[in-house]
Image (cartoon, rainbow, N blue to C red; front, side):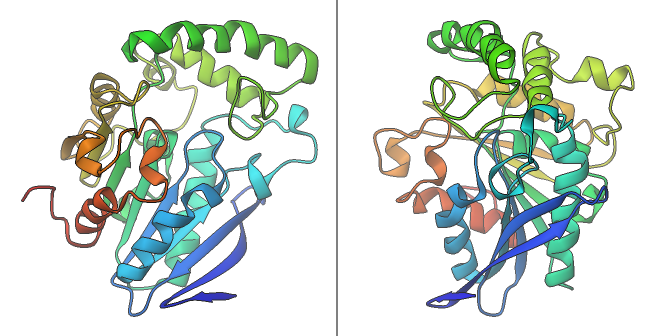
Length: 294
């Protein structure tokens, strides 16, 4: 266990219901008043969120980050034959992570902070009803048609050129090259590509009963932050994702880089050092339910 000022940091392991071993890190502040589960974007390891996790813990939270199966320290011996599908991250891993957070922070309100797919997949969580409120950051539909125009050629090449080549050569999407994240299991990539080809994204397959889900169930309030220079999670893409949560109370906030004291944020910059202006808003929402500007 490490101790950095008022925050203790501990690396942990826990298991999903299918016994997959998952790696996590717990950041514990003094006298925590809220528990926050940080769920990563596709291909992002948990260590990417260490700065915002430590900030929130210092304010008075128990914060848990974790690696989805197949990612980082929750990896597979052979990624190509791991059998990991995209919704497994929500249905199994996010569910298990929330259960573990509850076990180490009993009696403390549970909340989530989701980046990209970490917000999209709340509707797959089996225990979603235990969550008091959600914060989404850079969360939006993966359909290329609702992304910024300049990004579309690169996305289409990634799906049908580079990605197809990697699957044929390696059996998975390796880290490096055109893909800047951690290596991806093949079925994660295939499902992501299939959904991203249509405006309805995951909805048609949910309607067909392909995956168990809870998007139609009552959901806790969601506040979503859109970064104006994010080419992927645009305001339209975020609106599409929020519409999947039919019964939830929803709020959408747009922030520019200038408002956050920088020149660029993009799809992942909200979690890099120096974004305390945004993190303060996240804290107020997660800890007290206060919306930005109110």
